[in-house]
Image (tube, rainbow, N blue to C red; front, side, top):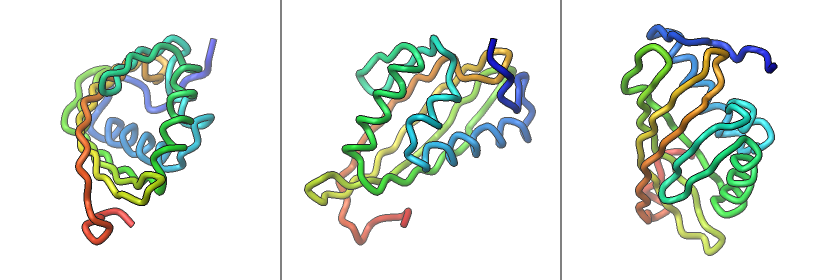
Amino acid sequence: MESQRHPLPPFTLDTALQKVQAAEDAWNTRDPEKVCLAYTIDTEWRNRTEFINGREAVKAFLKNKWEKELDYKLKKELWGFRENRMAIRFEYEFRNEEGQWFRAYGNELWEFDENGYMQKRFASINDLAIHETERKFK
């Protein structure tokens, strides 16, 4: 059995905000080994049109993502929560290998197990090509 990953549900406003900030901080490391540890062994994801199942698949997905999305920088915002679920708004910027910058906008729905690990993550994401001068996150 894995240890607990605080804060634990049911969430309060303060603990929900802590969980969102922890996720933002982890994703901005761009370290798949570290980020995947926030998810249950059998986590279920929908990311755009991809369906990903299990922590190891998440790790592989993130490794591939950050090999293609260079200079990645993410901001997350809590939109709502109750008990063990959260709704998150996010945006991030990255450039591809050709140097084209993008801003991605989206929403995530999260569900946590009793030990504070994310067991479900459903993300809807839209990309917008931007000029480097339009970047918000540097």
